[in-house]
Length: 193
Image (cartoon, rainbow, N blue to C red):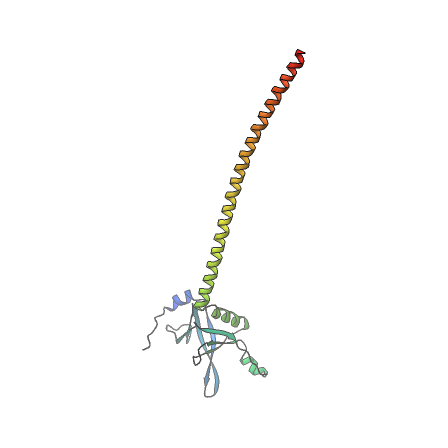
C-alpha cells in the first residue's frame, strides 16, 4: 500500500538545495517527448511537480544508490539531434530494472549545477563528508593539544632558564664580593709592608 507524503511546498522550497525547471524526457509511442517539470532537490530526495504553483508533487525520486552523469552520445549526430541532447543528464540506479530519469536543463551551466547537486545529495556522500570533517576536527584538536604542550614546555624552559640566570647572578655577586675582599686584603698586606 502506497502512502502519501505530506509536503508543505513553501517549507520544502526554503529547505531545498536546488529548485528549478527541467525537461523530463519520456518515451511515448511516437518517440521521446520532453515535458517541463518543476524539480526540487531536498537532501537525497528529488521531488517533481507539474508546475511551480502545484501544492502536491507529481512524484519523488530517492537518490540513494543513484549516480548522475551528463548525457554523452557515442555516435555522430547531426546538428538537430545534438541540440536535442544538449544540456541533458541522466539519473541511474545501481540496481537493474529500476527506473532512470533523463532530464534536460536550460543551459550548460545549469546542467552542471544540477549534476553536481544531485551527486552530492546522497546520504552516503553526506556521511562520508561528515566523517572527513570529523577527521579534520580530530586532527586540529591534536594540533592544538600539541601546541598547548609545546607552549607549556617553553614556559617551563623559560622559568628554568630564569632560575638558572638568578643562580648565576648570585654566583657572580659572590665571586665579585670574594674578589673585592681578596683585593682589599692584598691591598692591606701591601700597605703593611
